[in-house]
Length: 339
Image 1 (tube, rainbow, N blue to C red):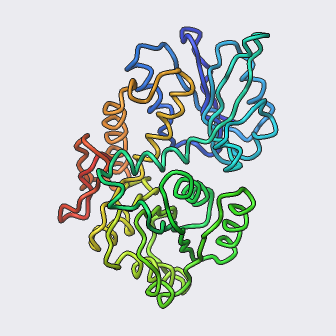
Image 2 (image 1 turned 180 degrees about the vertical axis):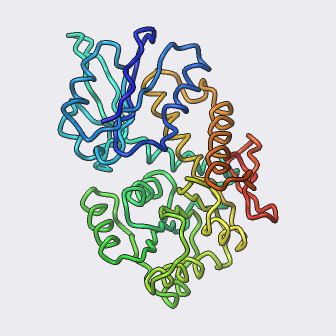
């Protein structure tokens, strides 16, 4: 277990609870917010698989809440006093916040899921005409893990997707996503698109969420899944694609394919930032509009550029401009959007 002990000089503290979390930018994001609004708060990393240790730590009167990441997003549920609609319906908690019972003064440890809000807001904060781009059209999710489930929820709950296509190399993962989403009440109209022929016969999607690591397809199933994705991206209608992968670089093969096909590309740091700002809404009581959004974007962009430079031993191609979450090809295979 690795943890930074909360400083006694900090008025209130929270945790990032998960393992492994060495690359997480969550503490940096939240510190930028707290410094920006004049709060003497800090979020500390708790790199641990020890749930009992975490449950002891949150009893501290100075504790304000926690970011909960893998492998604890489901395991934490049984320890909560209450959970919001999003957390209950998705079946995973990434945020712990505290409400106070007005009658007794008792602290109520409440869970929610802001991952789904991050996906939603990444689209609505970056796409000027949602009606034209993706409302009333099928959505598309690439992948079969936890982020894919969150994407299905956001597309179904808020983004007016008529149907949702799923493209993934692993049939069993897709079947699990479809089964679980249906059981939770938001899985109607999910379609596993397995072949290029099937893709060509379908209406083109409007909003695409890519939830897979950035690597070139190698196996037959990976090559087929990429071909199916490209068939859907090459249809006449061009909407917006959110690339959830952003470490070490937010500019991926899928982002490149999408942009060349004429799609607007939204960088994955946007989803990460907006889910974090939604967490701070719960913790501070301030609306996202009252938080230093542009400062957060600039700080995260700089941190990613630094990580990229370190990983490559040279400066990155992508130059953050701090204005929005779009990526635009600049002829160097880089991204000149926010992150």
